[in-house]
Image 1 (cartoon, rainbow, N blue to C red):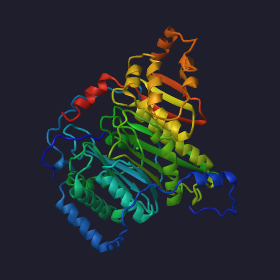
Image 2 (tube, one colour; image 1 turned 60 degrees about the horizontal axis):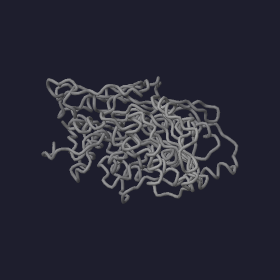
Image 3 (cartoon, rainbow, N blue to C red; image 1 turned 30 degrees about the vertical axis):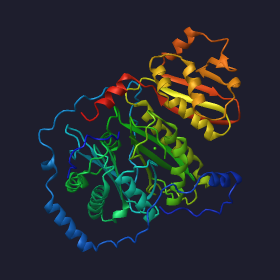
Image 4 (cartoon, one colour; image 1 turned 90 degrees about the vertical axis):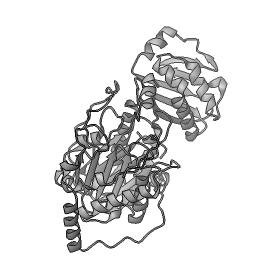
Length: 494
């Protein structure tokens, strides 16, 4: 989660030929629905030519000589984790996630936290890996977000080679020094992995306003390169956690033209969750061969129905990032259009993986004890339905009623009207699970307080609202608001 600190000095297989396929109406409709890339690039800059191999080898030797061995720079006498949070009662187990061909992972303790824990993740990708990204639209974006936007634009998402993620420092609202720190990290990784700076993606999470001490990352690269493994998803998910109480991962398999492909992803987030892209970081990799433009369309499209449909506290982060990588190592044919009929199963499975990750964010909401699904139907448009659903889901009065197991449907009615969207008050209907609380503008004649109270004791709740003016519908997932949320955030920096 990303927060604001107390002011202090800044810390230093070739595809088989296929017959041409005529686009069906459904495929054409899909391509129309999938809007263009949402990544906002900065002014294009000419990429520097890669250094000659001899120069790179010399640079690496100098870097190795200058840097201290991995263990020597670790903070001495690391303290145990202070005030470790109990695992959320809504937690789900980390799934079995096999290796993804073309992806290697390594984690390390860089020392961004005073207590003993790994807080650095590095992922290396095979040559030719496609990349796509969707980022926060927050007015104060972080230096890592700026870097990824710019360089995805420069490279057009082609040949991503590495990802570096740190927890414990957001490197947001840090000006030019923060941007320089990101550049130095990318440069060091590029030299070690024999690639260009723009082929290295960077992400950070932690406290806002603290400058990234990039030396804590670069001094570990000589060792971390030797620790890269094919099977390390669980450790990777743990390394990027902040106030998360459990690691989050999702996995699925899909078929593309008769070939099996794998999709694996991890994410972090617990508080400051109200994505609008979507603190939240998510990294997903597949061994499918998908062209960058098509991959970007898929990432942008399915972010709307997954990460942008969950909320914990209504606060958006400066660092929210979703990065999607396709290594092309599965043997499945390369796909160049997001609407290609051969991607039908892959599209379903990718959306399922993203939704699984998004819902785990809600399940780990800071202090959460209730997992709540809000359905809105009968709205004038889908956008109107989504706004109504989010207003209900983010209302402190509604969320505290969930925490108190109080079926206070009047608070739901309040939130519906506060959304300032078209509704027909005399046709509004509110349900808790199968139980009708209100309809036709007043309390339901079948309302039963005892049954309502019994239903509210469940850990997972569903509230359905019909506002009676159209066909627009939307679903948003949220959690309750408890005293523990206040305690966590009141003590976050102390």
